[in-house]
Amino acid sequence: MSDARKGELAASLAEVEERIGAACKAAGRARDEVKLLAVTKTFPALDAALLADLGALDLAENRDQEAGAKAEEVAGLRPDARIRWHMVGSLQRNKAKSVVRWADEVQSVDSERLADALGKATRSALDSGQRDHPLDVLIQVSLDDDPKRGGTRVSELGQLAERIAHVGDIRLRGLMAVAPLGIDPAEAFEKLARASERLREDHPNAREISAGMSNDLEQAIAHGSTCVRVGTALLGGRGLASP
Ligand SMILES: *Cc1c(COP(=O)(O)O)cnc(C)c1O
Image (tube, rainbow, N blue to C red; front, top):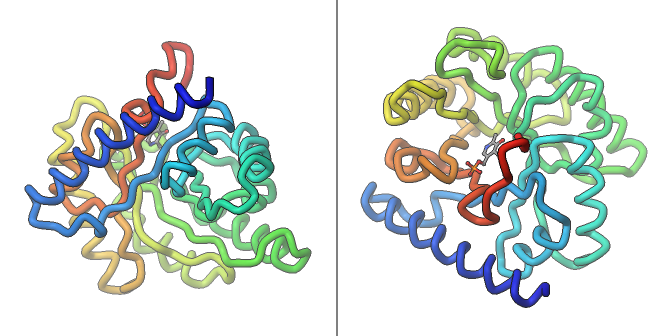
């Protein structure tokens, strides 16, 4: 059974790789400027392990509880795989302690209070030996200024970036966004690219632009994405009830 699934995942991974390669070429960019995150949410640990076997070592999840258990299971299945786990879903402050046990990076930081909580949780995880490296973070940006959907307003980005820079043990790597429904994705990604340029004036190491999913990765790459987050096109549909 797992052989058949591995074949399926290999085929979809090759297709996604081809799309990313073609999009990079069309944009005059090198393939290695864009990282692929496989979004394994709702799929079993074995799928994540098979993706790692196929060389997809950057894995992403959107719920702390599901991800913590899955990361542990995958570590049991593939103790030697050099997997990096990324948190891409909205995160409550009270989950900070838990998320720093499994995540190498949190892409969904959207408030100073969350940044503070992650800094504190990372510090104590480092002290107690639950982690051995600082936490990379991205600021999630709201591209339609609707804060209900997560993300900080572009106008508040500078202040949040300053705060992150002053909290120890977390490292600001860049920005993340989801293209809002009802807005031309190209326009949204262009806005994100401009926000990234401004951010880098003060934070030159914050170069990541995490943008693009199964349906819009080509447009995101055309507008400077350095990290596409792909679920459905790799693993299949999650069904109507799933997030
Ligand atoms: C689920 C999810 C994705 C992947 O979406 P697909 O359309 O399945 O590729 C990307 N980013 C975030 C934040 C997600 O929650």
